[in-house]
Structure formats: structure tokens, C-alpha cells
Image (tube, rainbow, N blue to C red; front, side, top):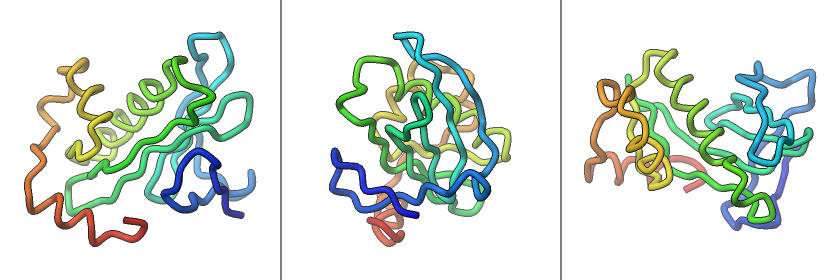
Length: 139
């Protein structure tokens, strides 16, 4: 099953049926108190509010690096802290997977500035990495 979010033109993001889902990373609440779930997918982390997927953070693994290159949250759900919830979980998962973080996406860079605990596992964005990201499917 593919999900075409009406608020982005990036293409489709696979959202598996519940029996195909990769383990959920966390369940927490957003600023409104609504339950959120962050789930690991194939080369993306998704965030759902009340069971509805409303955003994703796309990445590609490059050796020991996890390169985060695109994050989007449905504008109808803006201002609720969802990007922060999503990215904090994605960054924790990358670190737990033994990956170094490369924040090509500016939103990831913003979250990293607030979390110096990731400094030791964060690599700078280089021209080489930026060119490599453009060769990945979906870009």
C-alpha cells in the first residue's frame, strides 16, 4: 500500500499494513496531548497521530553513516512538536544502530543543535555526501 500525502510533492512513502509494520519506536503525546507513534520503515521513520501517518523523515545508509535528507510534517498538524518527536526518535535509533548521523536535512540540523549528546556521532555534511544523496531513489 502506498500513501500519497496531499501536502508534499516528493512522491510516495510506503506505509505497510499492520502485519508488515516494522517495530514501533515509541508512543508518546504531542503538545495537544494526542497520542503519537514513531515507526521505523524502509529508509524512513514515520510519525502517526491517533493512528494517521502525518509525517516522515527520509534517510539512506552510507556505510556507517545514516544520512537524513528530507523531513516533512503535514501542515495541518504543524506547531504540535511532531517534527521534534519524530527526529529525536530517529536520531536515537540511528545511534542505537551504530550509525553516524549526517544532517543533510536542515530540520535535522536544527534538532541536533538542541541535543549536544549527539555531537560525538554526528558527521558534517560534505559536498560528496550532498552529491551522493541526489543519486538515491526518490531524489
